[in-house]
Amino acid sequence: MPATKTGGKPKPRDAAVTREKILHMAAKEFAAKGYDGARVDSIVARSKISKNLVYHYFESKEALFIEVMERAYSAMRERQNQFGLLGDNPVEDMKTLVLQTIRHFIDHPEFIQLLSTENLHKAEHIRKSKVIPAMFNPLRSALAQILERGKAQGVFRPDADWVDLYVSISGLGSYSISNRYTLSFVLGVDLGDRERVEARVRHVCDMVMSYLCRFDGATTQMRQVADSVAD
Image (tube, rainbow, N blue to C red):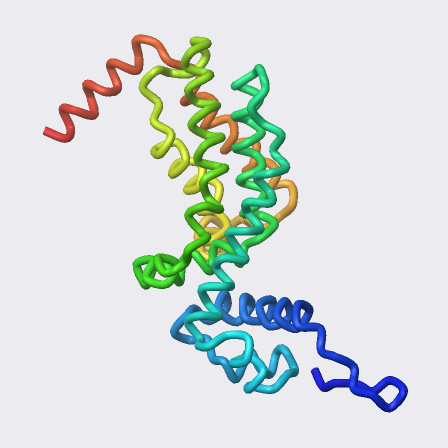
């Protein structure tokens, strides 16, 4: 973005806008091609700025990728801040958390792509971030608190673990997005169809809440079957 002149004097570059533009275009490049396939030259071309300017703001491709990941986690945290949870009804709070988490995956499919490429690198890059763990803490805290409140009220199963629960919510919510095209082909449906997406959201929420809220003697029987299979 070349400097323009006003009244014969150069106009200072808006650093924040320029950095945001680079991050936005870099996110597209990393999501589409993965960390290894992404090229700084492509990001430069997408951003329509000089390569030197990219390295002025980011010392390396890795530093740029880490900040892209931080930006992606930050967007998720902003979504979490809109939950308005921790009320008096843990069932409704949990439904809201599940729905909003899935909505975030639907609205930001590039986040799933970025997570996929980082998993190929075994979280090598985000381990170097000083802010990502703190960004995830609000969701972890909210999920754990809602779960414990529901257990205390007797509406959630007492053996539910917040880690397993979050993994299940994430897996159920993201799988149809990350595997949309292959699944659509082999199943003979369009998983991107608006009505099917909405039905999927309701289905996932129903599955999670059914697990949490419907527990009786069948739970013990299923655990016994699982233990016998493991043996």
